[in-house]
Length: 290
Image 1 (cartoon, rainbow, N blue to C red):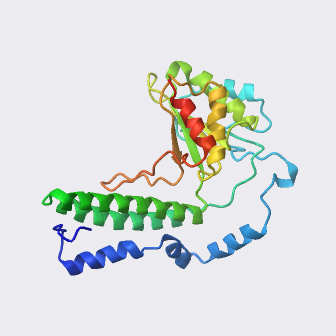
Image 2: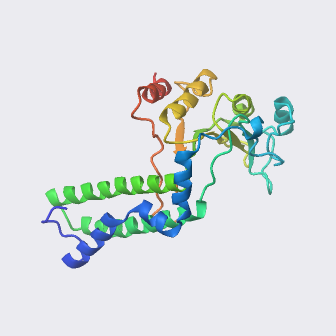
C-alpha cells in the first residue's frame, strides 16, 4: 500500500490485520481440520482413474422420481416430465438426467468447504470494510494504490477458494442456458438426449415451472472446472446441437464452489475459467462471434 495513504486504523492494527490476510493458507487450514484429506490425496496419486462400477452403467439420480431412470427410454422420460408444464412442488424443484457412462465421482466435503470458505470470506470482508472507510477520505495516487490493493486481495481470495475447493473435491462446474418458455421443451430434449448418450457433461437439469412466462434455467454439468479442454468440448458440442447461437442469448459458466450468501459480503467466483488454452479460447470466440 502507498505509505502516504490514510488507511483506517493505526499502524499497528493495520499491520497486524494485513498479516492475518497474507498468512492465511487455505490448504493448511483444511488439513489442520481434517487429516483424512492427506490420505485421500495420497491414495488418489496411487490409484488409476475410476471406471464404471463392474463395467455397468451408473445413474447418479437412480430412484429419484424427478429424474431419468436407466430402465426408462429417454422419449418416455421427456413425455413424463416436460419442463414447460411440470410445476414446482415439494421434492420437484428440478428435472434431472445423468450421463450413465460417467464414473462415480469422489466424495465431496461440502460442510468443511463452507466453513473454510466463510472464514476466508470474513477476513476479506473485514479488510474490504476498512478499505472502503479509507477510500472515502483518500484521493490522488494514494486512492489509486488503495484500490489496486483491494483488487489484489480479491484475486487472492479467489485463488484461496479454488485451492480449498480442490482439497474438498468440489470441482464440478456448469454451463447455464436460459431458454424462453416456448422453447424450453425443445432445448431440454436436446440436452437430455445428448447427456444420456454421453455427448455432453456428467449430468444436466432444468428448473420446473414457477411462472408461465419466465425464462427457464437449464444447467449442463462438467466434471471438473479446472479441465479447460473438457469445458470447451461441452461448449462446442452445445453449439453443434444449436443450443448456443452466435446471435442468441449470453451463455454463462459457473464453478460449483460459489458461496452464495444473502449478506453484504457475498462473493461470486468468476464464471469463465476458459482462458489459457487455444481450444477453450476458440470455443468462446465461436459463441460471441457476430
